[in-house]
Length: 322
Image (cartoon, rainbow, N blue to C red; front, top):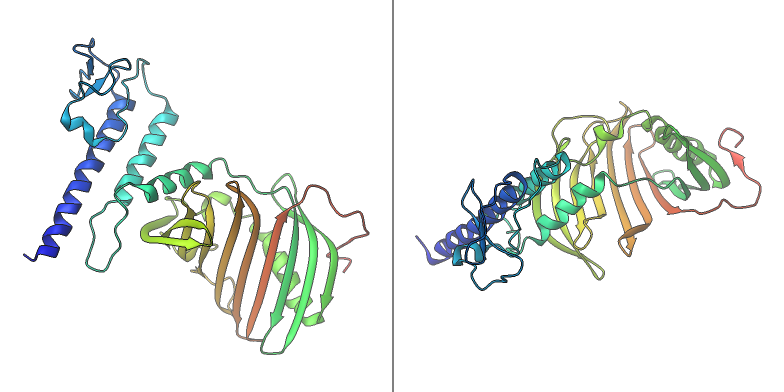
């Protein structure tokens, strides 16, 4: 066995022991509610025998084995753990398993501090709190490179009570073919997509398999990249990459191609969406959409989306009136 291979095994073994202790501590904290009376400055769990320092004892009597945990949890005095706590435990457990440091010769290792795992956990929890902008400005630049034609649209998009978008067109210009066959078709597809349950296309553990890829930088932001693969070949799902902000777990980039073609006239759809954050909150989304068609060649769209407090005061026409 080579020295390099032995180092990899030792590193993986040490990180696995640390991860196992962290997961075990979390499990004990959430599921075991039978602490024994403190003796010599320590609690002992009646179920699994783990020991924890009492709040006033500090780290003076902490056994060496428990130092593997970065922040030892306290035994709770409550009774049965809540469903939310159990769900959070499951998420964290899955994250630690996802971030396992065992590696092949050509695969990156998740850093031993678990930053990527924490970013992923924040992303999963944030999915339950995420809400789309109810009012936003939309700008679309579209083109048919093979025909040398361009078009542009500027509108305000509102979300109706059932989630269906309503567009108030402020400006539409350019070639009529691009306007009718590219821009209007895209807006119509967005309206039809509202009929698909959001849970069936969301990038979640239920719909996708995740594999950690590595650390990436976007400007001054550090992000963690994950390869995503749909568990089923279903409409609206993509195969590609997901980048998560290292601090908040928010999505800063998602890219890939649709695994199911929306029409027999479409050969491939590639999509890349980048989200700029301000204090951890999405400020602007830029989506690059490339649709390879069998009739007019490739159609390209760049969509800019920003939250809007109040609509413009000028006159505006609906898409139908245009």
